[in-house]
Length: 261
Image (cartoon, rainbow, N blue to C red; front, top):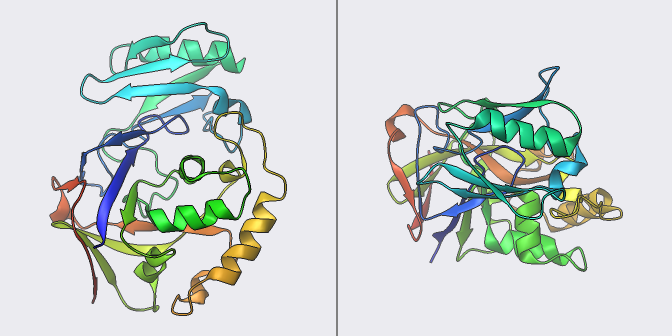
């Protein structure tokens, strides 16, 4: 039976995620605590895996309930623990020391810092999709592919690329029901450089994007609307939520239903 198998939040954009049992929907449609913080350089640009491969070397663990981060860089023998609300300058100083240039930590508790500000809802993928895509790359396992793709909610009990139906048929609205929460599929998420890199070392996988595009095109389901694919370097689904979903909670184990409007 289709069900919500995992929910992953990324409290600081570009750093490691944390798996949670439940996640609350904000008025913006984003998940509470997801990409709530982001790292910026002195020019006001994002410091992320797309621009700075060194960011992959930073390990972080989050305690959501206590609002703390355990942060460790290769320059440190042991992790440092900081409070996310009270010690933001100290977090920025630790990151600056490792990265070799000054950074600041900014916070947006209402929307976070999603890549797609028009569709800030949780990104959706299936466990079977991640398993299939990992099989295209010898030496890459399911968990590593999960950390490369960095989707928010993972559906199990369905076949690979099941989520591609969430944006099928232009002009129709597809609603994904996760328990009592309704999400609307918008489009397949365009990928960046991050999935090409090992999430621990930042090392690029040879010909990752070329292999991905060839396999994605070859395995695209017949019923998927190919008009969404101006290229095939796309995976997972961007979503939007209406204000009526504000305050509702995504709960692990919730049943999944699809409704076409």
